Length: 106
Length: 159
Image (tube, rainbow over all chains, first blue to last red):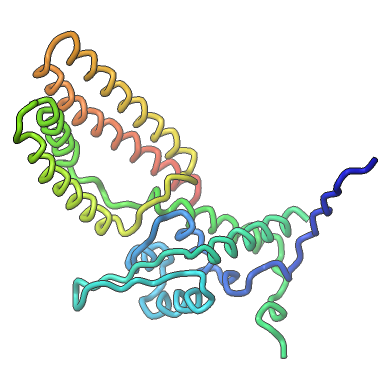
């Protein structure tokens, strides 16, 4: 008697990589957000070593993909922008990371 | 029309390895990139916990009311610290060096709780309060030092 069979793991390919996360700065941002409750604009800018405008652009791309939620609070000099990874974002990040590892191991 | 996915070029092994290294460094950042802890923090922590121990063992009608400003004070501190740090690490996924420091923290906390309970039972309330205040201050100072060493080690490993 044969039991239920588990499908063989599919070999990872370039197609398993997420083009939204593949850019190095976006991958770093996703890794950071996946391991934090949230992170604010200055922390991300310092860690990624990017300019204000570049960070805004990269985070806007992640927000458009539904991977990151942006919260703005306050006005003027005291205003803060905070980023939080979303559930689909976390899943996409984990898939992308697994694909990178599989490509490295293949 | 080609999708963005179709336009991805196959990265070579070096590029993948570099991406995974950067991924690991970024994942550790919420734990290991933080501003220096203020010198007053262990003392303030000791005073806060000592006051808390005094209040909850006072057994007076007003003692419960005093817990409200204590909780508010804690909330103000947590809010300030989060803004200062810029991020809050999740409880899972800490670098291994930080995990060891967290075990030190758990050991210190357990010793403080057990010691405090024993002192309260066997010696009295005031020695217990003094133990909590001094023990928390010393424990936090020790833990902060251990954490700073762990963060430095993790930064060096992931550099």
